Length: 89
Image (tube, rainbow, N blue to C red; front, side, top):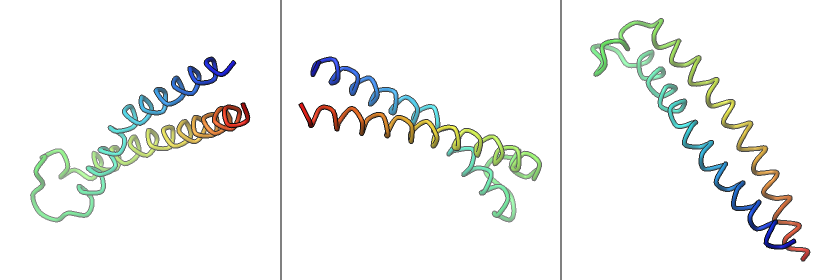
């Protein structure tokens, strides 16, 4: 029973890491979108001069980040459940 719970806990931790890696582009998109909107003058990436591109980056980045947050919260809750079961053994 204990080894099964430990294996499940390791799988949850691995899933959390993978979710965070998948969510990394969302954070980058959010940062680029905010940079493109608020920085005046010539940007280091030419497509950031168009506000439509910046708002698109913000929208897609926000969706990815929201998915990541929901998934991490679910995995965190599952991790706490498994850890509490392990602590009682």
